[in-house]
Amino acid sequence: MLTARSRALLDRYALASRALSAVTGERSSREPGQSVEFHDFRPYQPGDELRYADWRVYARTGRLYTRLYQAERAVRLHLVIDDSASMSVGAKRAYARVLAQLISYVAQRDAPTQVHRVSGGSTRPLQGRATMRATWEFVDESTGARGSGPVSGLKTLALSLPPQRGTGLALVISDLFEDAPLRPALSALKARGLDAAFLQVVATEDLDPPRGELEVVDVETEERRPAGPDEVEAYKREVRRYLERTREAVLRAGFRHLLLVAPLAAAAGDQVELEKEAFADLLRAGVLVKR
Image (cartoon, rainbow, N blue to C red; front, side, top):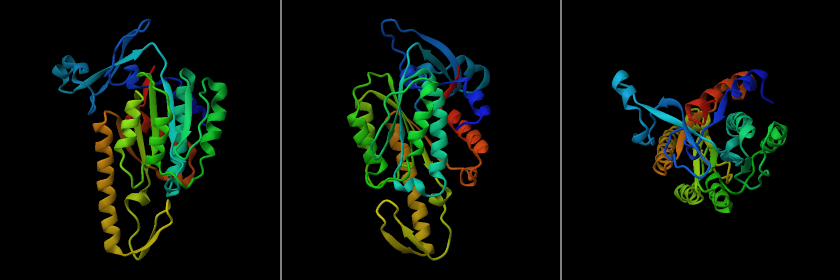
């Protein structure tokens, strides 16, 4: 359950999506009965269309900003939660849970929200504060399923969805740790007309495992291998390369990506601090905009 402080703060924010032209203004097309109005500014981010850059502000300040637009129609949100076994490493699962709580609190006020697990299973589309408890209970039930990895599961999910016609947003909270190409999943999302944002959550243990004689355990396959200092350094280099490739693939597909390291507060169970850090990360990712 979110604290009263977080709920009061979130009441001042709305869900942002390129499908609504609310973040980047990339698609400001008008449909019958639809209007798109100027909403706000934010610093330019890679992937924003330059036609929505405010060059007058740039001439005055030397800083590039993107004009934001709010469309008068509700986005349909697909909140995708990674419940694969690798999310049990470090504090990833606890942090992902809080991110999902904050997102759903804002989204369900305005838009039909459906939560999906990468291992399978979804809520029905829910809207309104009265349905919030059902959403959070579904998220809490994600306990580390084995089987389909997050990338394979995301592709399967995307292919199962009906076409969204540019009104759907997929928010993916996952470490994306799977030895499978990401491009087919990204293509499946685009084929369904979905905008997407990837919040890639990793743990400190993923990035910098302790030194010494270790045993590496693949939590997805349970394969075990001995690992000395040389293997640990090689592992760290490969993780960095993997994260770079993942980000590049997501941005090339025209989606948003933010790498998040689960904070120490997640391991300590500090709910107040967790919510503060998660809120700041969602603003930084462009997932939330002021009303």
